[in-house]
Length: 277
Image (cartoon, rainbow, N blue to C red; front, side):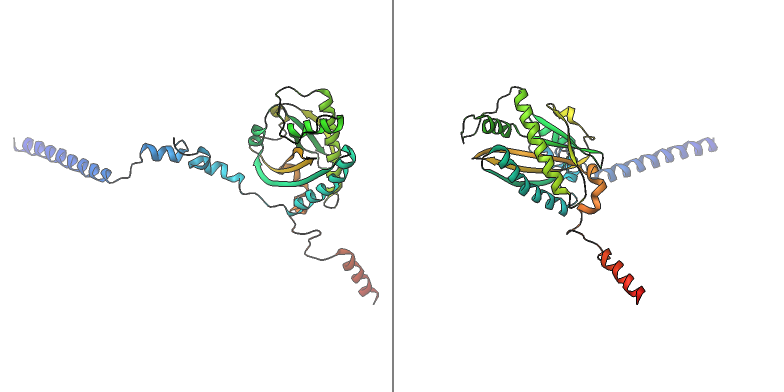
């Protein structure tokens, strides 16, 4: 009897000990920080009152498009393009043409295609020596301005109404000719950096058919403003970073011919003279 009582007593003590441990654990859990539903929504970028693009995980994912590698030599190339293209377009349209580079930034390729409104004319051009593709987008307003300037349309400086109709074959032909002029001057502007020839590849009217890289790939976006007698629009270059990889070392330089060892010609001349001496 005494042994059974001792065993029963030990079981009761063990149960009491377990209950005490559970109470201690419950007391510790009361001090733990529990996120509210508003805090969870804000963390995930789904807050009702805030912008999804600037909050939570969405901000961390999309923030990479704000920090991009600076390309000083590419800025020099587009400055030369503006000077060359100003003369070329004046000869092409026989009217006063003003050009300026409005913006140069980094974007995700898929996000950029989503911003293009229909109807659209997207020119895919190829860098022959690099064997890579890039995009040239002519805005609808500039297309209508080009047609009126070349074919004698209304010379109105007021903002034009953008129609939702598909582009005609005449408009497509004029935009193709404009794209070829731009690519020819772009080739000349790039010649001092690296010998390359940009050629017309094809034209697409639907952005998803102009996908030349993956949507998540980064690209450099350059916006060039073209004005013809008070009217005009934008021409946008969307060049994937992968397309410029063959000349990356040249376009990241701070100035032309940046080297650590000096001019090779003078170095070889000095070696020859020292050897002769």
